[in-house]
Length: 114
Length: 114
Image (cartoon, each protein chain N blue to C red):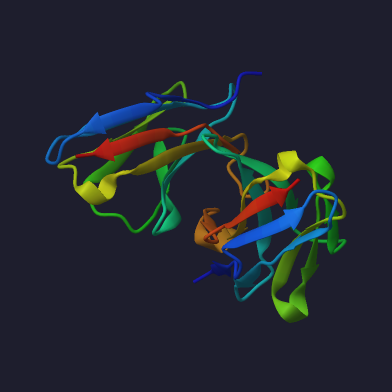
């Protein structure tokens, strides 16, 4: 069965600082990997996804993520955080063998210090 | 294009009652998935419907059921409500029947069981 671990429950960074959110997955074959963001009272918005090819993927709002098969990781990064980035971030994994359903991590809540 | 809409946005019920939640997918989308989000368990997959057929199901008791109509609108029903059913229920739609298509989430229905 596939699983996702987000080891950081809560992270606080200063506005303008760089950000890295960690995600580790467990899956036998090449997974489909996603990062979503959820603002308070909102649904989830897709930031970026990885299926195959270039291991560094660019997403919306200046986010990027790097797939590292050897480390089973798919960490999310942003070079300079804005106050509006404060939200909860979810990493998810899916696979056709599991019927296309997504398995989500427990999320990382990001606070941005002015 | 209008996004995924969910009604009602907020709901308060008492134990033992039943509830029906509604989801209207993005126009043209034929796949609808439901997720339950709680602080303790995070985001958990309930089920997915495609062209009125349940394609995949998560590990939830039979009290949780759903259906999809010919216009792709979907409903989920929870019977004999328990306190633990209090959660944000998220609906998501996507166009093609596959994980490579972006899944768009609605704002959710907040269910409180007293």
